[in-house]
Structures are given as C-alpha cells and as structure tokens.
Length: 69
Image 1 (spheres, one colour):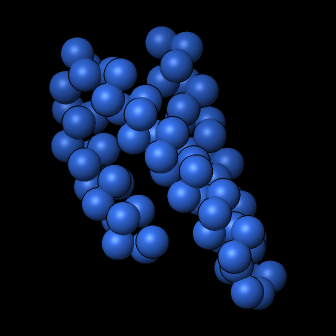
Image 2 (cartoon, rainbow, N blue to C red):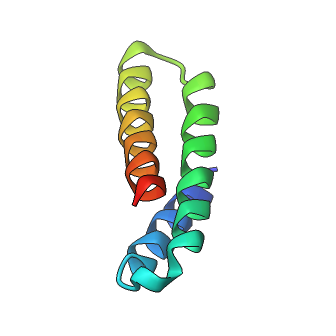
C-alpha cells in the first residue's frame, strides 16, 4: 500500500503544475485520503497513528481547498 501511496503523491506533484487538470488532482487527493485512512486504521503504535492522522488532516485540508477553488 505504501508504494501505491508514493506513486499517487508523485503523480499529484506532476499534475499540480497544470491548473487545467483540477479534476484529476481532486481524484488523486481523494485516493490519498482513502489510503491515509486505511493506513491509520492499520497503524500498530501511537507514534504511527499520530503521523498518519496528521497526514490525513493535511490531505483533507488540501482536498477542501482544491474543491473550493
């Protein structure tokens, strides 16, 4: 799952350069949120849960900002 998450982040970084592809970016951000949630549910210790919860929060905020623009 970590490889998939990495590929989505790399793709999203490339897509961020092109503002006319906002729908793709929102789709990638949605996938990131889903993967973050899955990783958070499966986290094995408190430190990992805090890290993943923080990442989920930032991805959710990015999605909200992208959807509202």
